[in-house]
Image (cartoon, rainbow, N blue to C red; front, side, top):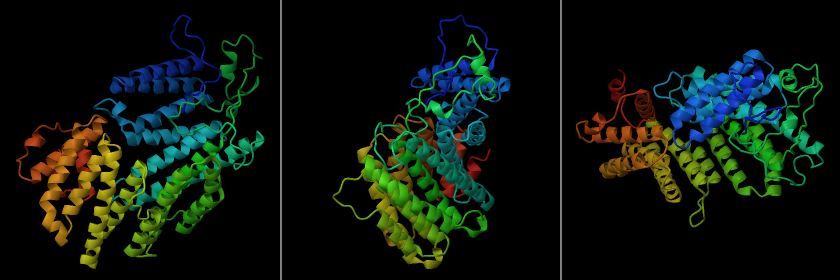
Length: 496
């Protein structure tokens, strides 16, 4: 999403001076952020330093004018961007993606206090809340109280997206474009936080003289206290409305398994299910048919169906067979049909989640283990197909290695017969991911897991010696143990 600026940025031809006013600190923050953008492709850490200085400049602007929506919005958006791309942060750093997400949530809430009906701020707030909830439940053994906190964030996200939909539909209708299912004139918008289209400036009108929101911006350098800025009204498109509806559906899907745990309290499973199903039938399907995005909607519906199947299992409303049926219904056998990269990844994840739950059902004996083996095999097949479509995606190769390790650990005859081959394959996949260009954190993860496999295979720790200890290495090991890839003995090796 673009940086917000009202009034428009002035020419940089004027003589540079240290910023003093809120508006000057806002200008300085934007310039620092643009410098970070220029360095991002070549030196991510240097870009990150510019971004951090930009945040500091936006905060200085807010110290001088707490009502500056633009400074609040830019700070919030940039905090979220850094949280989503931790490779931009300096190493070592006291700033973590989790802490940045928490700050971004608070900053976005402050945006909504200043302008509660700004569609950009509403959409962004929903996204940040979902990201923080996802970070909280990253581990399988997450405490109940933390899961409850994540559930609350997701409930808030669902409500924020609902408010965003209401604002967008009202603005769309006010322009004579229907009520969300009318014509698609000018329908090329995007509500994604990293989009480059200009914001809908009419959502943050500059108050007339005497207003408190942006009076600092209106008076400084305007030459007249009665000067007025021309606000260009950008139409809300059907694509934006559909994107918001899909984001809300995704929040409902993430909420479903948490609602299934009665001890969490909060919203009920039936509430989240009803919210999602109503959203699909009343908004998402009609909109997709009008603007031609049936494929995107089909995948969103599939993921919601899989989450509902998992939630029903977690709530004790069905068994593993019921969950399996939900997956097959969401992702039917499509041999010979073209499947997109994201569809293959989502399908693989659905199989992995079920297989992981089945592998823990030791009381059910061989039946559950065989079910886990079957679904790990199905996930491996989907990941293999995804790797052919996007061979440079290192995350896919790491996922393939993880699945091979998990398959090798199952107590079924097929696993015992092919254990050595599966473990060897995992090492190959990790090594391949390590060699690909991409996020530094992912390369470290691949290198650590390759070394862990080699160590357990008897290499004496030769690969481990080449890995410099650090917080990322510890994080990778903790996650690998939590996911059941390696034994808890590894925790003592990285505890220091």
